[in-house]
Image (tube, rainbow, N blue to C red; front, side, top):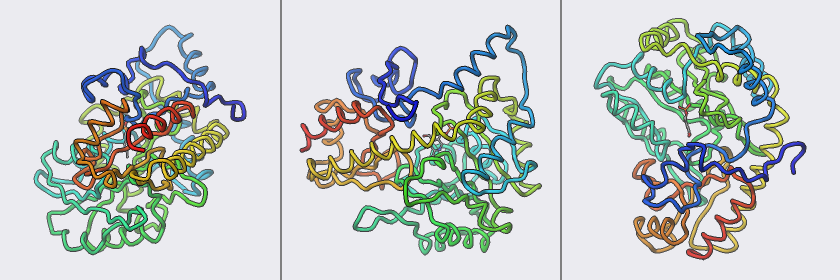
Length: 391
Ligand SMILES: Cc1ncc(COP(=O)(O)O)c(C=O)c1O
């Protein structure tokens, strides 16, 4: 037990249509794997959220509803309180999901065939959104030092920018490499964007999962000049385990950029949102501090436990302690096995469902991503299986 919240409780999700479960056969070829892939958590959504949703169900009509002013104010106060980020009310707009905000930004700010920068290894929809909308990818891989720490390669990026390059997709904090970018790193990137008339589209969905010694810096908070070229998309969906409610917020300080974004949002008729998402969003940002603080302690212990266990017991797997996110980016190159052989052993011998690193770009060769946002007993079971096969 941690404070009043029971993160140790194992909850059966197999009958809940959770993607992590229903897609097991399609993705891994078998049902009997321990699913530690999709980035949602195996913890209950906070009670006060469930209670607010139950109360809404006491009203029998689920018609069209809209977000009150207090919806956006809840985010403003959260951003000020948790990140020291002062956001004006007028800067805020909506998206169902963070990925849909990335897609709407591509539509709003680029023409077909224009170019969008990504920094792999990175969350697969970054590739899919750009390519799916008929734009070109500019691939600016992160560089990994000898200790497993990734940094940006701005020299490489400088060379790759041309007059058709319009946007950069930033992941801050970064999935899967677990970096909470420093103000200095973000300033370097922003300087390049300012010099080359690029718009920064920052996906900050992991903003709340930052561990001791590190800090989340919203890139738009660095200066008014940077804020003017930045679109930030975020959501409480990861933080409070409510991604099924599809409710996100988009911060666009510049009036013209905001209008162009809203045109696409309205054209696709995506402004409406949904009743339950609207309620939950406001609830969590108003009341979620204590729950989140407790969750972060639990996750940090899961990370410490996992990193220590792997270092002590499985020398063929290299692991780096993430600064942020609940995702571990495991390097299997020391096993001496091919990527396909590791994958086969993970699935068919260890019966573990991790994300295949290749989905994050070719930089993910020999890597698999493990989601540790689960009760400690589940994480321990996964580690035992890993040791049995790779230890
Ligand atoms: C970096 C990143 N962005 C976006 C998402 C998903 O956002 P949404 O479901 O709001 O589209 C995820 C989920 O894993 C993520 O890791």
